[in-house]
Image (tube, rainbow, N blue to C red; front, side, top):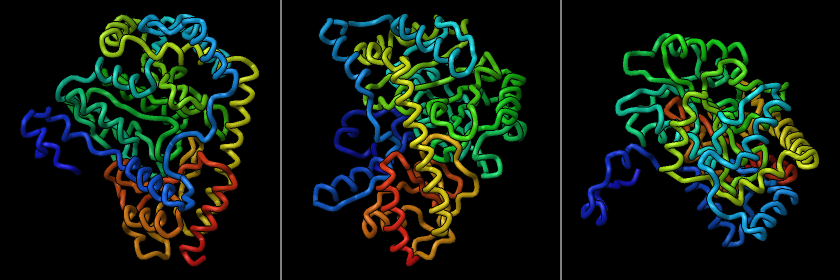
Length: 401
C-alpha cells in the first residue's frame, strides 16, 4: 500500500489518520493495466469490473433528455423527487409484496452515498461493525471513514460466504454496534437464505444493534424469488441502486429504506453532505418502472443467468473450485489452488499471468478480505456471452486443458 504519510504534500499538510485505514481498490489497478494493453492493440476480455455491459434503455435516456430540455435540472428535495420515491415504493409492492411508505425512501447519489449516510448516522468513533469475509472492500472503508472499526469474520462456503447468527454469538462484545451485510454479495454472488437472514437479524435486534443490508444486486437473482430483509425485520436499513439491475452505473443514483423514526436524521445528513442526488438521473429513473422498461430489464436478467449457467460449470471443468453456486449478481468467486499452474497459491500473480498470457482480465482475492485471498479470484460475467466463451477457451489453453 502506498505510504500516504510520506509524500511531499502530506509532509506539508498533515493527512487525517483515516486515509491510511483505507486501502487502494486493487480491481481498478487491474482495469488500468487492461486498458493500457487495449491501447497497445491487444484484445483483452474484461471479466473484472462489476458493471453491466448493458446501458440504460432508450426510454430512460429519452427521459433524461426531456428533463434537460424542460429545464428540470435544479436541486430536488434532499430525500429525492416525491414522484421517484413513490415509484420505488410501488416497485416494492409489485415485486416483493411489501407496503413501504414512500416517506421512508431516501434517494441518494448512488448506493455508495447511501452507505456513507448510513455509517454517518450510526457509526461512532471506536464502534465495531461486523461483516463477512469475503465482502465488498468499500463497505469496510465506509465504516473506517467515520471512525468505526470493521470486523471481518471468516464466512465459509457452507455458510454461503455470509455472516450468521453464530458469528454474532461468538464475536459480539461491548464495542459491537451492528452488522453490514450484502445479499446477494460481491464478490461471491451468494445470498443469505431466508432462515439465515431471519436468524441473523433476530440476533442483531436481540443485542440492540443496527443492521445495514446491501441489496443492490437483489434484482439480479436467479434461483427463486428474492426476499428483501425488509420483509423480515422492519427496523433494518436497506441499500439499493439503479446501477446493477437497472443498468445505470454512471448515473450515480441509489436509495435507502430507513425506519420512519430515522427519516429526519437522514434528511439532515443528506442536506449537508450532498444536498440531493443528481436531478437529471432522478427524472430519468422514473422511466425505469414502466412495463416496457421492466420487460427489457427482465430479459437482461435472464441473459445474466444464461451466462452464469455456462460459466460456472466451465470453470469447474477447468479445475477452479466453485463450492457453492452463485445465485445472484454477476460474479463467481473461485478457488485456484487445484489448478495446474505455477501461481496456483498466489491469486495476484495468477491474475497477472491470466491477463498477460491469456489476455483475460480477472480480479485477485486481495480486495475482498483476509480469509485466504491468495486462494481466490473473482470472475465477472457482465460481458457478452460469446466473449465469455472465448475467455474460457483462452483459460483452457493457459492451463493446458
